[in-house]
Structures are given as C-alpha cells and as structure tokens.
Amino acid sequence: MARHALLIFLGLMALPCISCSEAVGCDGGEFRYEFTQRNLTFCKKLRRIDWAFGWSLQEKEGMISIGFQARLQKRSTWVAWGINLNGRMAPVMDGTVALVAVQQPNGTVLNTYNLTRASALSRSHKCLPTSDRKANFVNFTNKQALLVDGTIIMIFATIVHNSFVIANTTNDTHHPILHHLWQDGSGADDQFCLRGHQLDLHHFDNRESLNLSSRKTVWPDYPVDGLRTAHGVLNIIGWGILVPVGLIFPRYFRGVVHTLKNWQIPHILIEIFAALLGTTGWILGLVLGSTSTGYIYVAHKALGTIIFVLAALQVRILFLSQVLALRQQREKDDRRSTKWVIYHHFVGYSLLATIILNIYKGFHILDPPLGYQWSYYGLLIFMGAIVVLLEIWTWCKFLSGRALYREP
Image (cartoon, rainbow, N blue to C red; front, side, top):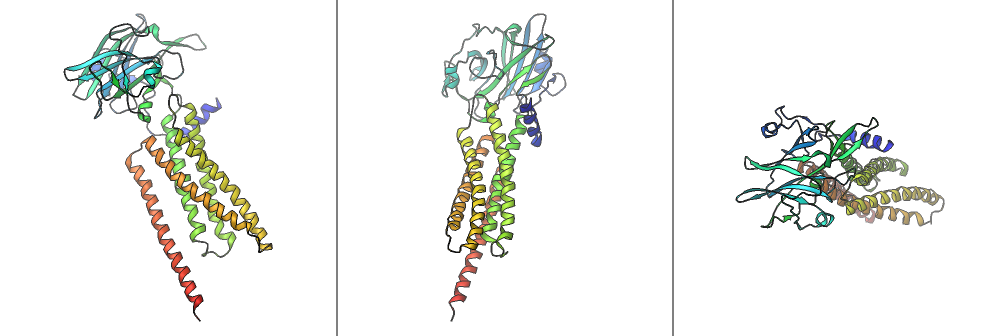
C-alpha cells in the first residue's frame, strides 16, 4: 500500500498526458467507423498516435470481439496484437498468442503466432506461425485484417471468453482481465518469418492489462509516464544543472569574497540542494526499474548509482576538508588539507563527466522531443562558454599580478 502511494505521489509531480486509462464508447466520433461497423462497444486510445483498441464483451455467448488499429511507421511492414494467458500480473512476450498482419505486395496477410521464450529472446526472426490451427488453447474466429488509407492496418477477431484470466474480487464477482500486447516491426520473408521489433522504451511499453468489465487499466497501476518525467526532470535539474553551477563558485569567485567561509556558502548550499534533487530522481529511477518487467537498462542504472556514490563521497570529503582547514589554521605546515582539496576536485570533475554521460543515455532511453534535449545541450554550451571566459579572466588577472610583483 505504501509503495503504491509513493508511486502515485511521485508520478503526480510531473504528470503529462497519459494514454486513456478508461475506455469510452466507440461511437463518440474519436474512433474510426470500422469499430462501430462491427458492433464494438468500448474503445480506447493506446500509447501511440493513431493506435487504438476496441472490444465487445458477449457474456451470454462466452465470446469477446476485438478490434485493433495501428498506423504503419516509415519502415514498418507488420503489426501485431496478442494476448497472454500465463496468469502473471503483467503481460510479457513469452506465452503470447498474437495475430500478425503482414503487408505484402499482393495484400495484407493475417497469421497467428505462438511466442515462446526462445522466440521472445531472438532479435532476428519470429517464425512460429500457426495459421488457422488452435493456438495455445485460444480459439480465434472471424479473423480479418484491413489496410485503410494506405497507412492504417486494422485487425478484427472473435475470441473464446473462457480463455482469459479471471480475477475474483471480495464479493466473488468475476471480472475478465485481458493481458494484451501490440507491436510493429519491419521485414518478413516468404515464410512469414518476422524480423524483430526495435528494442526501445516505446516498443517495450506496448502492453497493458485491461479489466473488460470496469473498462479500466489494471496494469500498469501507476502513472508510469509521470514517474519517468519526474525522474528525468529531477536528475537534469539536480545533477545536470545545479552541480555544474555549484562547481563554478569555488573556482572563479574565491577572490571576489576574501573570507573562506563566505565564498563556500553558495557552493555548499547549491551542491546540497542538487544532491537532494538528484538523489530523489535516482531513487525514483530505482523504483521504475523494480516495477519494469522484461527489460532493464544496465549501463544507465550503473552510472546513476556511481553518481550517487560520488556525490556521497563529495559530502564526506567536504566535511573532512573543513575540519583539516581549521586544523591548518593552527598547524601551518599541515599538508593534509591540500591533499583532501585535490581529492575533492578530482571526484567533483569525475562526477560532472559521469552526470553528462548518463543524462545523454537517459535522453536516448526516454527519447523526449528534440527541443528539450537541445535546450539542455544549449544550456551546457552556454555554461561552458561562461567558464571559458572566466578562466581567461582568471589567468589574465593572475599573469598581470605576477608582472606587477616582478617590477623593481
């Protein structure tokens, strides 16, 4: 309970527009007429533009009619929709039975595929069509694939209702839960062996568990898009912006305020605030990683942990350097303070390089609009230009001071 409360709270920190979690009527004008033409009752938009899903639950006949709509991407030649009956809380490829519409020169061909663990792990081809045979105890009837307007593929079918996972509530009311997945990819040979889809976050997200009675999404049960946005924003502001700004103060403003205590105050406050935001974003990333199934970004996670460790070391080094600085005031020949300062600088610059690398990897994973990415890169370039100017000014001041010192 506490875990779900934390997920919802953090997700609301930056909650963008998420795909509809509750379905609406197919006849509301938001969906193509092919859905209502086949008497589908409820429809919902999926996470991708012009992708939609509709269904009609026929309880007396024990049947469910489904409709799926997908817009072909530039290089896409096949789209798929499937169900998973493995009984898990989240749908995965292993054990999925999929209807795959393959675009061929002579038209659209619809086949049924059984996805095993071996085919799910294969990045080359998914070559397990079962054609019209009964697939994993799922009986697809009235199968049809349409190509509409040259770019939209629609799949329709009827499925036996008893094949779905049944969830029991406290009042023993049965609610059919549909674990379904959808996907697209490029390439299929003459034997209808499919090339694997892209391995990015947008393709990993093409799945959900849907309560057909309440029309609500039951998995994921938290605002995943909001959590990802909050994770990215917190890390960019904390690690990616405030840490470089905090590094500027001790390097270039030490001579402006002559008292050691005063020039360190903004440096310490900025870095502490940056560490708080960045650590929150890092924890949020760990939560996202623990709730994801079927994929993990090892390098991004490892770099994030290294950043947290280096930041924790910086706090400890800062404390020790202050203690040694006070001792140095009493013992003027004590060189240990200088060693800690050098160590502090080395860890700080290593931290900055790791931060920039990991933010770049985060951009590659989340794939936000290019405007957001280049805004951050532009800010980095702007701060870099300021650092160059301040470095030139510092050296000019240093060299001019040496010249005046050497005059007779």
